[in-house]
Length: 73
Image (cartoon, rainbow, N blue to C red; front, side, top):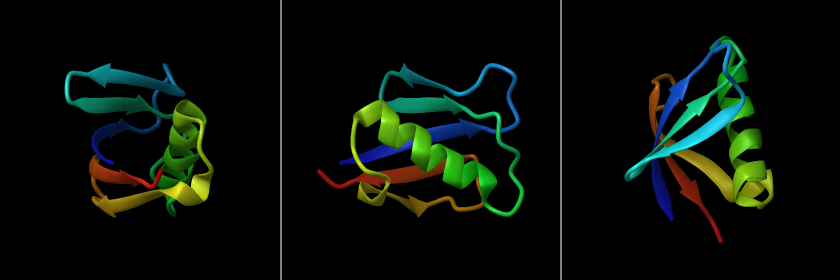
């Protein structure tokens, strides 16, 4: 499955996952420095979907807030 994700790093709300229609909005406390926000995103989504972190990958948007995430089930 592929999900469109909008990430809000360095957020005071986080960590939080909200479904907005056909995309997910993810609030993270991690700062977007040296991939810390991407690592936190994968960890949070793994907990949210109940899968291992190795089953989630970022397909596009490594350095963007708009990402496509692939979930291997």
